[in-house]
Length: 190
Image (cartoon, rainbow, N blue to C red):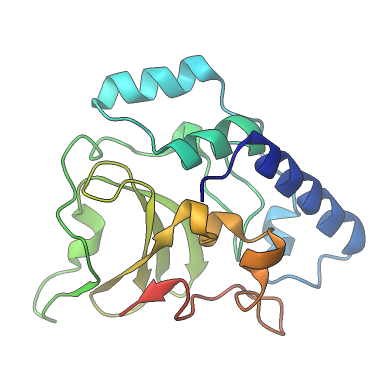
């Protein structure tokens, strides 16, 4: 189910509630880094310019997130990268995968050069999160599950993946008892 502007305004309010409830930045892993602060929303002309420059359409849910919630900042673990400064030079090429994939150990970290994805976040320990921009499943989240060469397909953004960590349903089962967001079988598939 798509997330509209009202959903993201509610998520923004939940981030503000997290910030108020956790002034010492101890309840959610990574909050000492992002301090529950969101970057300003991305203006429509900037979104249009990005799409025109790379010949792609930003997935609708991610586009709404950027325009309403903000360009990045507060998010699971260490937060979300600033969309306005991301390297999107490779999103014009089509991403080929539809399912999780593991490369042979001999391949020299193929994940840094996959086309059609934008890196949006890190969980630390070499775990990177991507959103598919140009490929067979735009809006689908992917995670480089850490050391090794495995890329796991996760549910689309609208289904409560990494961006939806503030939602009441999306956080349940995803935010563990130590306040750290982690992928589980409901979000990612091996």
